[in-house]
Image (cartoon, rainbow, N blue to C red; front, side, top):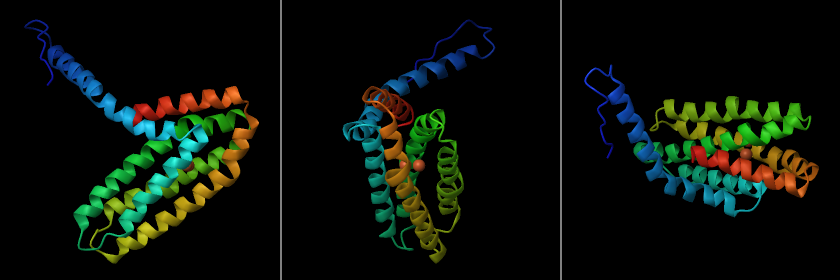
Length: 190
Ligand SMILES: [Fe+2]
Ligand SMILES: [Fe+2]
């Protein structure tokens, strides 16, 4: 529970702000264990590429769980959709803020931009649509199938073409540093 600190009688609301900040800090400490546990799944898989592959598998598993739901289970669909959004959100931060930047730094701007565009136009749009569409209508399952196909194509491009090339271009030390950097960014949003 957050502790309220009074900063004098005429603090113009700073006391409330401070209490909020302290509460936020306590919240961060409490969630650090959960965040570490979430990121550990990625980190334990191996280097940055192995970690991302493990996350692709995890996301696909959540999508398959969603596919098994029916139009009579809108609440279940909403709940599972939230975990998919969380998993893909963290995944996108790691790729967009670290891996795609490393690609650009090595001159592969076209692939970095194309993959980033997929995240916005295909993945984030798909998740948004699944939030909007009535979860008891057939249109919802159809939109899920489209998102699944889009993600499969994007993942194939990353795993079979772009990421192996990036890993090969970097030295063992550079790959190790990239892995550390990616896991730190992932932890922030885990
Ligand atoms: Fe991606
Ligand atoms: Fe990915």
